[in-house]
Image 1: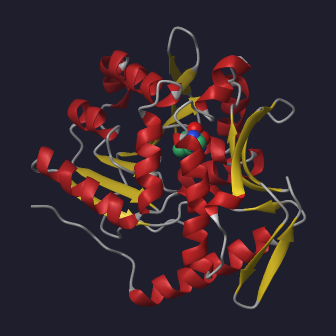
Image 2: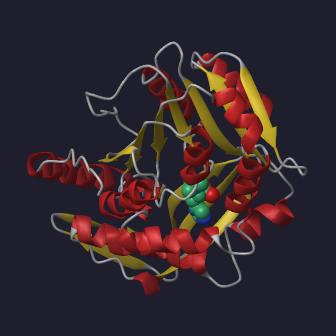
Length: 320
Ligand code: AVJ
């Protein structure tokens, strides 16, 4: 048995589609065309991302999992009293299992933009932890967040693993952290994963793997956009391009036109010169000290940090 709270009504859904179209058009018509990384996660995108997390080159997922495992008992000590676990971008709910085992919360709320994928994962979690009140909320976490109204306000822990915060530039990351802070009561906390700066030789292959899974993940955004917008992007016309922009301390993912092309959608279109790109993702690698300063600015108090021996990734706990 599992209880899924589907908060999306058909009316909300169609206005969400409207907003998505407007957002996509706005990005595609900028001088530097862009598509927000949230559109990477349609059903196939979620599957491809799961494959990415298992690639030999993609160190973040396994490094974070190792920290969660090694520091598990210490974290449980610090986090005791947490009854309400809220995971943002919960996806397949793999990472939260360890926390559920050590913390035994009463309530779990998984929030993700990919609703079906999430509901299935939350069902599996509910099966594994009988007695856990587990719910799925489909929502775009870049906007205002509405949690189930009957969710207790005391004892909340927001869990935001995987360094997804890296998708946001510094100003948006600060705004996100402030919104997370608003979800918490005075006894609340945040447990967040951040990917740290490291030499290029490790960074770039993680976003341009030998098997080409990341390339497929990036190109797949075009099929998703075609469905949302009615556009005619052809995946064969574009090439995956990922590089570290050291000035901004971020990996950038782009799709680069293989030849001059025109893309059409109902009511418009755009011409792309050969090699012109669409910017699809930033993945910031914030230095730990800078990130801690941002947490403080967002209203968070004392921090505790767990990291791996190479200092490639950090799990940060901060009090509300
Ligand atoms: C899910 C945002 C953490 O930035 O590493 C993986 C997404 N993009 N490979 C990341 C991603 C290309 C990932 N995050």
